[in-house]
Length: 102
Figure 1 (cartoon, rainbow, N blue to C red):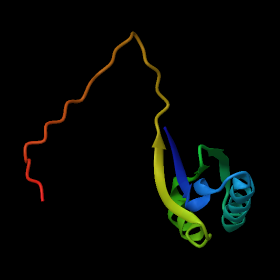
Figure 2 (figure 1 turned 120 degrees about the horizontal axis):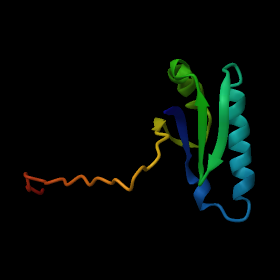
Figure 3 (figure 1 turned 30 degrees about the vertical axis):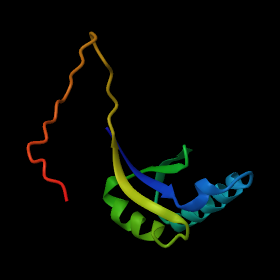
Figure 4 (figure 1 turned 180 degrees about the vertical axis):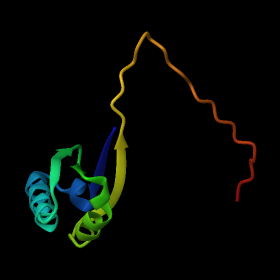
């Protein structure tokens, strides 16, 4: 199980050909904001940045990342490293009992 910080960008997804420039600039600013912390892994995937570090430091790191302009959303994320064995799957059925709408 891995613990990550997930950082989403704001209006960067609306930019055109220069989107990578904006993303690279904000990534440099994020790295600078958390330069005092030890980061195990830092990678970008589909308009988000994922930061793998010591879970104990997450609160302090998030406080520093909040100060970077252009950040839309920050959350802690758990990634499960699991394998499907023997073709066993499960389904969760959810029933909404209360159906009142405004």
